Length: 300
View 1 (cartoon, helix red, strand yellow):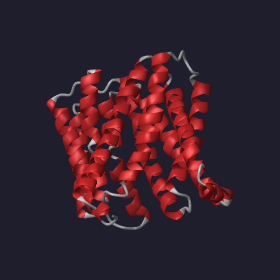
View 2 (cartoon, one colour; view 1 turned 45 degrees about the vertical axis):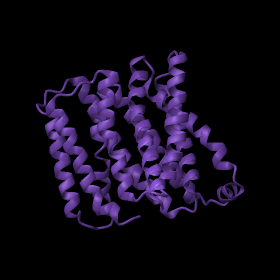
View 3 (cartoon, rainbow, N blue to C red; view 1 turned 30 degrees about the horizontal axis):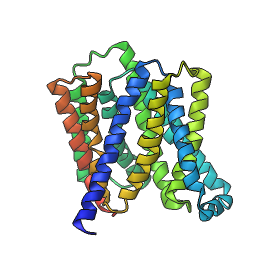
């Protein structure tokens, strides 16, 4: 690949991480204007599913694969949709209604650490030196970020929900990898089907428990933008960059989201950070990157 083509892929990947980072700000804005959290998340991913569906089914090959898909594969896709979208995204939206965006992002950024730990247990492989260093640095960063531990009661609820989102996101990542490696389905079908199942369940849960609120033009503008641009378009562009970038490059670019979200939340939401919290976020970012280097270097 030429240097210009590689640079183009890097810039496209950075654009995707920027779009994903702005999602956190837009979600916070929507939640601050009384959008029900679960319903908000359900509308985003259901609409994104509807945007992807025509592209997923336009190919006769895709339709043929779906018709011959065994029940076991459907079960895995349903489980992936429930864990990765219904539980993870639902918990993430709810936690953002209680906590600053930087705090939730900090906790979710621990996903690679948990994934590496779970993978080690399942595959009976001890974590590498890099992974141990990453875990220790990231843990130190979180401790520094949250000290002193004078957390308001309302935020404790948000922290518990965010930790649930972290566990669900880690489990969803493992299920997603398994689906992509073992399933005969192309990635776009895996994404579309699991997103549709998870998004519709999330929308139903939100509608039943929280209702739909009073959706105005601004609400719909945020929902449509999140669904069409930050989800359907961004996921498609990200998958395209994966063809050109190594796993290490993609991993490092993806980890730029933590500082991006922190800066965007400060500029647009007024979520200021003190020096101690900035040091904590920096340590977590470095730790996550170090912890992934050896693991991702093995797979191009």
